Length: 84
Image (cartoon, rainbow, N blue to C red):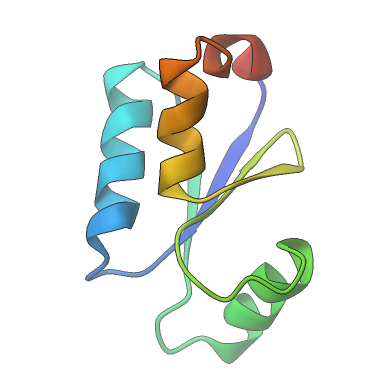
């Protein structure tokens, strides 16, 4: 399974929803909490092409977007292929 990284915030409902989807699918992920960590937030913004909102999700180093995009990939049946 390809590595998954999620930049998140502790009080972000969308972050929790994205993590729940991955957990339900049995997908391990690395979480980087950007709260109070300007270096982590700057890294996220740079990797996400300027996007400043959380979550920002990467699969095998490829930016897939946020929670809405992750759920759209799942609905369209494309998420499993990205993770394989």
